[in-house]
Image (cartoon, rainbow, N blue to C red; front, side, top):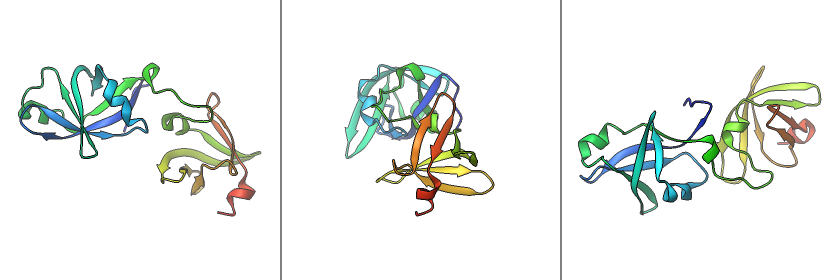
Length: 165
């Protein structure tokens, strides 16, 4: 799932719903409410105007201006929905975007563990999937993760606490 440096992926278009060109959104964001306020969004590399967003049975659906039939809508299925980074949802102190965490180098003092390749959402806490000499999973807990420095792409952990998991 690649993205340009100035855009972030917030969803993916799924199957069509009905005959009017409505598509299901597969959210790839923790901020699902952000779809409700959309006026324009990138679908693949093309910017499109949002006609309406509907929530039905716990799922989110989107209708674009100019997409008025099922056949045209099907051509958009599996395309990523992106927004410019400047339009990313605001974060609270101590929160980070997944795309900022991926690629960070993980250390305990001078000991290098590897780079974060993925962030797994487990429900209770995130888990950093780190690839170095071997792949390890690091729980994103305050007792384990001591400092996240996005500017320098570094994460400091306490491996003594980590080894208890």
